[in-house]
Image 1 (spheres, rainbow, N blue to C red):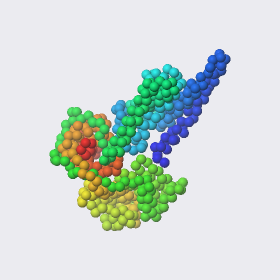
Image 2: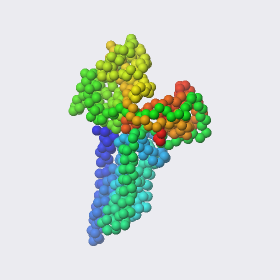
Image 3: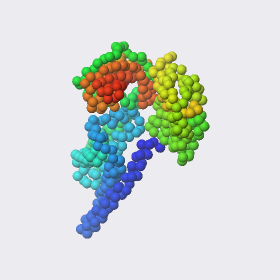
Image 4: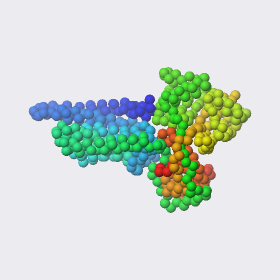
Length: 481
């Protein structure tokens, strides 16, 4: 099961007791009210009473999901005030888990928009419902922040309010149709129809675009006002080498087949039906382990994987040993079905500790791109007990237009770089940034293509705090991104 879906089911199960408490509290209030109305000879509104019971049940569950069933996160998470950041993250990554973040925040408040107007007639006016949806969400976000139960996020407020209004429009659409108020029904249908059309448009646009999105592509610009940029490397005005590369990504089925074959080379059999074997499927990763013999994590998109052989005694992993030659290591890897490309150079990381690597830095030959790094650990007697293979060979897929290094530099200076670097850049507020190097490299996008990016090596006045080293960030190289 997908880990995030499993978490959702877990939270809903934990929300059942508070929801039942809310239901019981509602019943305790409504029973004497019903008796009083009957004594007075007045009709008891059963439909409204049911709506009140369901509303209290829902509010109990909502409190549990948003406040009670969360681990303390510390006040360091702060407040996220940048609107629509969650949607841009979802667009860039385009995975189920990231999209579920804003969509579930919308869905979570749909019941509020449905039940509140049915329970209390005043909230059948749109402005009362808007105030209620925004107000309840604002209270939740404030409590999450001050109780250290999560980050106060303006996107949660936007999504929750939208969800409440969608629920309101749906219930008022139903009531309008029931009362044959056709003009009102058309007005209430507008927001749901526009929301569905917008979401469908986003997914269709993604489907028809030729390549995927880079998960960490720029979303918003860093504040670079007052920064002195010093160019210390040559930057051409000519576009970089065009080309987007492709290697067939894993599917769930092909990944299972690869894992079974790879582990079979090591004398390990995956028993997919055994309760002692965990096989978990995530957005872009599959994990296979029996917690005693092996652990294998595979990335669908770029086919990279991480393997650990738990059968090798941990004491033998760190004994100082004689070195392993390149030919011996290549042969050992071939026995496991790993063909190391000839374009990858051999690196001795730590001979005594048995750490070696093969690396290729964007080597293009005959329309094939060899890029990435394979690292491995060798224990006593030459046993490979750890392999991290992010070394890929991909074929030229298309000659997409690539911007020049100089244009990429201008985008860098304007703050349009790797978006996760932006908050730290804004916090540190460097006064002078030296651009030491610029190289064309490749990153795997959300559809599995290897897209070109310009990787800049930077240096600032805080290098000493980082042990004397600079830092790097990237600018997408495809024109129009």
